Image (cartoon, rainbow, N blue to C red; front, side):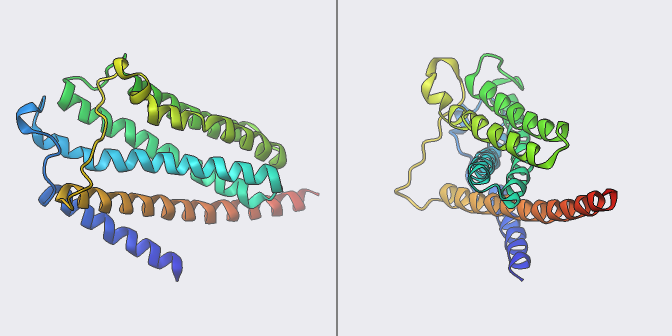
Length: 228
């Protein structure tokens, strides 16, 4: 019942957020300063929540990895892999939406020397490698332990990606989000709804993957028992 409520709430919020972005929210930039079609800058309302959602998923990987190493309980390994898969999807969507936005703002899909773009790509590749490492190790306990260490060490890419445009200001053309929280503006309302919608989407996808992973583990246990 709780999962059904979560899924329904996620769907409703996603629909509301789409409506707000296209019919209510203002263009988040002075149209006279837009490098391309000002309407294209509305992708900001999707791009920012998607990027933070990826960070959130990777934070879950980090926490679950720590808990696994402490307790050796398989449930934390399952949570970690589920969060990693969802995080990789959102990291890819971050790169894709950012490239589309960059095309309108800067005239090209990728600025090779921009530190935020490059650190975001590195972060995506780190967790893609995490998934590949898991596929390469067959023994469950060894795979879980190695993945947990990878999940902890790899998390350093998250703060580096987030802080990159503040640490290396001369190596980026990426804008720094500075919002005026003193007014309950349509821009702020749209962002809040979008953040809520994408955070719930991350949670929903993770729950679905956890259920699938548990079922997969049960099947593998039955196969191992049969082989014995």
